[in-house]
Image (tube, helix red, strand yellow):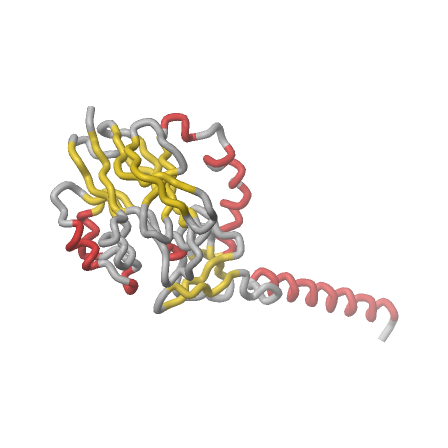
Amino acid sequence: MTSKNKLKYLFILGVLIAAGFALADSLGFFNPKPYTAVNHGSHNHYVPDNLDPGVGINRFPMEEPAPGEMITPTGQIVKKTEWKQPQKTASEGPENQHPAGDNIRTIAIIGTDQMKFVAKEEGDRIGTGSAIKTFNGKSYLMLNQIQVKPGEQLRIRLRTLSQLKPEMMAHNWVLLDQGVNAQAFVNAANRENDYIPPAREKDIIANTGLAASGETVEITFSTPEEPGRYEYVCSFMAHFAAGMRGQLIVQS
């Protein structure tokens, strides 16, 4: 074999090796599991390393992605080739544009180990009560009411402050329609359905996912057009009975 032919074959071999490495990388062989299995009661959720902090653990899949697939920061399983375009245009997303919250009212809520909704301080059109001191030594005010206008754009941002494991302490925020029996709703909520009973979804106006210690979840929605009182609850085990509830008051 001449030197020229040797160089030719070496070049072809190099190209094949490079192509093999590129294929393996695209299929995730060099980083096979860029996600973590997080125990959530009786099952696991697979959470990517680049998760969106505003998405609750229960929103992430309970099955692992197949080769060539990935879990997005918000919990969808997609083909890696399909995710390239969103990554390229991510800088055009709402979070990098002029703040979209100009016409959206945000209510920041904290869920505590005492199984209460609290707020850092008094605010416009919210009703607060007595102070609660948490394990970090800070005091917060009980959140009893949120007053809104009909059809107002409202963002509920819920953060959990806890020393306990997720299976022992997590919180959500569930706004129920008028006339819904809140006790019957929470009785139907359990760990197997992530505390949102499928048969009762028609009773819900809006809800966040579950947030364990250090996690933040949020939901943005239009408040009801019909004036009245709408009950909101945490549907995690026993939290409603402990007083983790309040009222959204719609008034013109």
